[in-house]
Length: 623
Image (tube, rainbow, N blue to C red):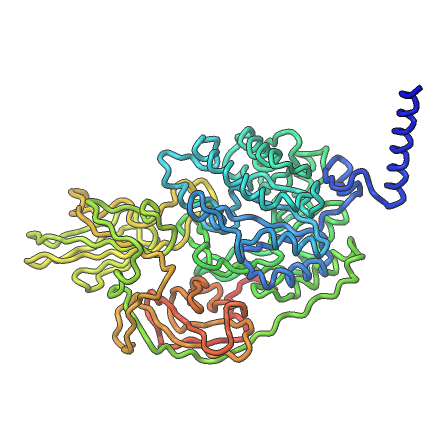
């Protein structure tokens, strides 16, 4: 009798819980996200993924909310973001989640705005980002094979995935957060076809406790679309044109799950020296409407591109359209839905009309106003410093070695590296060849510049007339960005890798002094007041006086180089485009005097720069 009584009590308690759950609107599927033949389900309800890509690491944290509010007001309900492994773990075993890398704060901002999140932790992300997000220090591990099940690589990947997912875990959908989907690797079918490699990374995500959707993204060729996925992982598509046609292809390859374009390329990465490609946004909006009417899910890449602050831009080589080495710009404007500064565009307005048809509830959100811009006027450089006279002031490390080595091998990820050696007199003018130099080099003999070599120079040979008592040879090499896409990402070290060869093929030059110049601190530079007749590359310094800090654009009257604001390396500038100005967020400025420093690599036309209220873009295309 007692057992029956206890059973009745338990049944009554269970019934009361069910009634209470119904009364309060609690859904048994809360916290669940999954995909099946009928569609995408979040919290037990079918959901159309209308998504935009926003990278927290390319936008100052002060403006994350503004970008996401504009995304929501555009009719989107989800934000997608990569996570850059090389920025989060710049030194092996040392992680950084502060400031612009504060992933939790970004996820919290998305959650506060009611947005869902598609997280793309990599380990590889491509994204026109240095080595596609893979840390430079991986490349110096002996015989490592990146993006494979090489135990060395996978051990590093597992440590990274554990750490990045630890940051994200409070925001998993099954923990009450906005992350409904996590991407496994990125565009892997453009590199390999090892299904077990994808499965192993998926297992790392599952081990973290995530219970939402797992997916992959691959490009729009037949080989890539038909690449195999492990069971339970949704295949999605990357494409920029012929959307309806490519939707048919992905449906044919994966008939039992809905079609999604997880990267709808609304713009194109900005290659140095190449005009920005723009397309007719009205035609793009029409294509977008067509696939949404057909039931597809979509994510605009990029919604807000932002900036490759520092020296994190990637590069291309040995891929269609870029057989020769071509680095990307510091700007990641990419003709996105929002500009680099986060402003709405005609493309935004056209896309918003489409998205609101499929998410009319978002029409209640007001589009935030664009930020104020300020032209602060002319900036006069008052001090200068030739780089050659400041090698020791800039050097983080000096080594004396019998041979040249890469900057990577001495623990340097970015910047410049300087090689110096003593040449002996020969009985004839001596041909010398730089072997496997990456990427730009300045060669001087006894302080006199003899040559500048770039990746376009197939023969990097010059002839030296060495005086009777010998001469000092200096070679300064610039890292212009590591390849981020294709089959060459495992060959990404920088500097003078193959050494200096004498007399065509006869002899290596030995005994070098090597200085590491990462350009991460300019405080020890020995400045001079004289600006005329200076040797390049050279630093220049001036002041920008600001009343109220507002976004601005700096135009340097030079050829190419680097720009610092108050000690912060904003990135590269380039007179050949595609953007000839450097975007400076208001967050980098302060009221009063702001220090402006540049490293001009070739020549200043005048010792000045100018602060403008709009960018200067070199475009090709329609709108």
